[in-house]
Image (cartoon, rainbow, N blue to C red; front, top):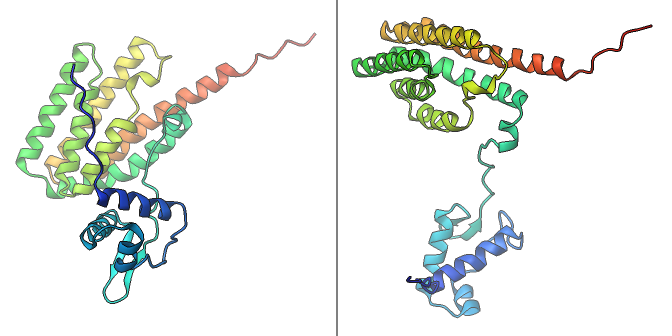
Length: 248
């Protein structure tokens, strides 16, 4: 077995870490001017080249901003990135709220896809609808092809941000079919059949370039899934309530 020791950190990396630490600790606050190049050379004992490389790295990270003729200043920290915690995903009520976000995004996305789609996009969507049907017929739930279909619609919208956002949604905000655990096999089959019909109506509207119909189909499809989850939550709440003791 070979063990590779990490290479010694460069002087520029060490200086970056020291300056980053002062910024994160608040020693250098947003709007503050950091020491000049000469001061950093004198204080750290490194060369001007090392100082310039360290400043360039911090600027690339968005932590500092060089201003022509004025110096280098600490920037405002960026807003926190959008994220969904595991705890939120474990709370079905929060999942419903996240589905509201997905509904708002995908309704408009479907309309734009209808306006901008290519014939290749339509062929890919129709193929995925067929895959979903085949998976359901084979006692599956079509989840994988379902996610691929929504991502294909995102690409057809011609807006890369829909694609990037939906890639995030696909792994975090799309509740699996198995979330609802109290339905009978017949109810599950009926639901999957309805979902397949909704997908087909959505793709048909996009193929016709009917943006309004595509938006309506997307909304109907996503409202169906959200409604099913909300009804399940209500049933669970009812089941958790203690039974009333009979009077007498």
